[in-house]
Length: 261
Image (cartoon, rainbow, N blue to C red; front, side):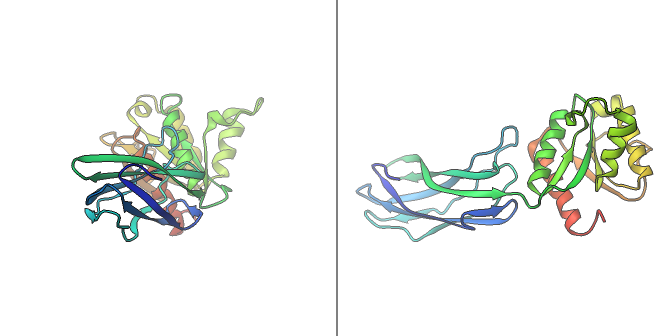
C-alpha cells in the first residue's frame, strides 16, 4: 500500500480473521513516511462493506501523530465494535489516511486484509415482527437483518410465502407461538390503521408472549397493549437504520439477561 508520500507497511487485526457481531475488534497499522520531510497523521478511518440500507459505521482514530522522513510509526491501534451495519461473511476493508505535509491530503488504499463477521447465534430462536404492511415493511426487514446478526430470526408474515395456508387461522398464530416474543413497530402509519396489529397483539397476549413495543415518539400507545411482560423502546425515527440497529441490540441484551424466558 504505497503512494508518493507514505507506505502502510503493517496491517493486523484482532480477532483474526473471525469476529462475532458486536464483539470488540482492533486493527493496528504502521505507516512509513517517504514524503522527504515530516508529516502529521491527523485521522485514520477503516472502511468496511455495509449492507444496503443498513446505514454506515466508520471506525476511526485521530492520533495527531508526527512521523519524521523515512521513519516508521509505532503500531497505531483503531478500536471498534463489530457493527451490525457491516456485511456478514468475508469483509475486505480499506484504510483511509488523512495527513498533512505541506498541505492536507487524503489517501484511500485497500488494506489487503479482511475480517469474517459472523452471527451471534444459529437463528433458531425467532421474534415475530408486527408492523403496518406495506408501509413499514422495509423497516421490518431491516430489523430482521439486524436480528439475524445477533443470532435470531425476524419473522415477517408477508415474506412467508406458503400457498394455501390461511393467514389468520394458521400462519400468524403458529408464527407467534413459535416466537420468543413479538416486536411491534408502532408508527404514525400503523396508528392510522391499527386493526391487524391489534389482532396480532391479542394473539400474542393469549399465548403469553413477551411483547416489545417499539413506538415512534409522540404516538399514543394502544390500550390493548398489556401492562405485564412488556418492553418499551422509544423510536426517535423508525426509518433510521441506527434506531433499528439499537432496537436489535436492545432485544439481544434483554435475551442475554433472561428477559424472554
